[in-house]
Length: 391
Image (cartoon, rainbow, N blue to C red; front, side, top):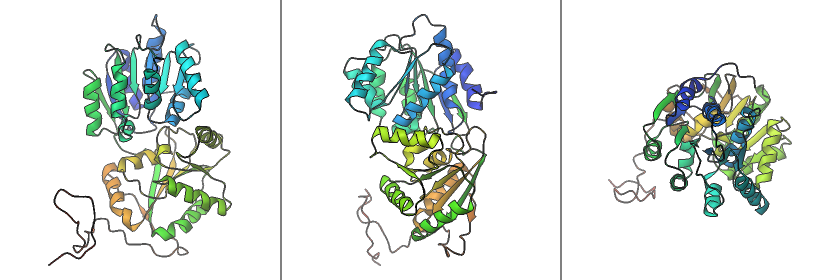
């Protein structure tokens, strides 16, 4: 498959998994986490007398489940080991197909939590012989509200199993989950929350109204072959899609309102370089492993600093190089400073071209005007008032 040496996470995780330890591993996106847990699982599976439903991999999104299944197919090509992706979003035929496949048996299931719980409730899947439980992108699953689902799934599994938890970040909620479902795990940390060294990161400080012209300037003045343009909401994704169509620039929007078949078609076209620009929300920032993405553009600053790491991690994968550009308006400056604090580096601010004009001053540490105060008691109702403060 072209891999000549293991990545740092593989060097540390594989030996520990082979000897049977539970593992909680944290490594940035694009560092080879899938191989780090799948290769030792396959190795142990080949030595097992009973392989039926040997390994369960849980992933937060359909796209990531498909991605992992495709990688397993490559890693296990000459072993006779089979895998099944199990996820929602399809029609009744997809449900029946997944149900029949599970009943006939597979060595590895790669599933999203919601669909797996539905199948478990139907009595389709029996995990009596399960040896490995793997949670991939665990932090994302908890962000999406899957904690209770994960605990419910674990209740169906044998207590005697090896559990591996892989995550790009390690917030307290991940440690709480690990304490509940892992047994004396070995902890492995590889460059937590740091973008790859090969990413050329830079930012433009702009007014919101200037972003459209700036995007056109970036596309014209930078060398690129494929781009992911990130926005924080699907409404913004749809507006950008309309703007690209009006400008006759080929691009595809990717969001949750699309049917699963449409999403798969768009990703396939992007991977095959039939589509060079894809516009999406943070659902694209995890599990989309496409070779040769030369540029990531953040139309806006992500609400969570850790999502920035995942977004820009779509480029410069596997020790390649890439460019990450972020548009920072006056409202997002504090968010952007939080990103710089997280990754422990100052991202260069590039001057706007003369044709676009002058942007706002970059001053994220400026305090809010004291005459604007929150309404309500110390309990914080969450409502804001712009009444002048009484003196």
